[in-house]
Image 1 (cartoon, rainbow, N blue to C red):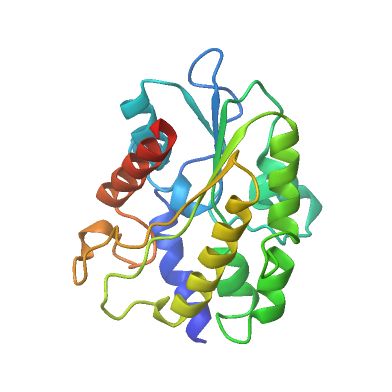
Image 2 (spheres, rainbow, N blue to C red):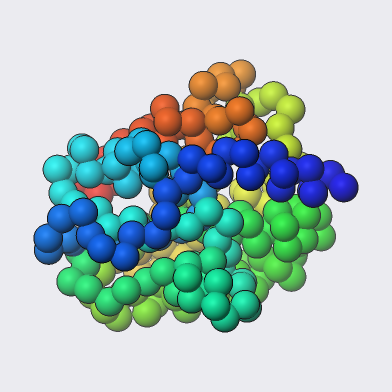
Length: 227
């Protein structure tokens, strides 16, 4: 019941989420962004993470993120439409591929409880095996630098995902180990982005970023790319 309520609350904010881009906003794009609603939210209002990256880099970003997307997603038709994050990828002359994901797999796949097996399927403890490392390996074979972005932390007040903190930290640790294996793979933690008690970085559901939060995530991404 608890997780059903989380889902219903989330639907309200996802009305603001953007759709997968099948046609680029510009010619000859070099940056591709993929992932779930953390990336796609505010896409229809021009205030998503990809818009924040575009604004700062003055480079076009193709945004194929989809609200509700997962890595472990089996339905073929909706999966091909982007609900499976690995299916969001389109081959191209990408310099950078920016992506996130795994949160929906954990929140709705195991309720952020007894999630060891689910996390292992996403990425092993040493960062070498799982769906995420396998997918990133494919992206690297196509020549792109890969930037995997972690999730925002809660603002320190009661939120529907407060019980997911430990799982989020474990995912971050494993992704950081993956990044250490390849100089072309980078992990960006969003820990410390949200000041304790500050709700302004989150939407009303206290799960997704507000427009301010999306802009702040985009700013951190650009800092990492420039580095």
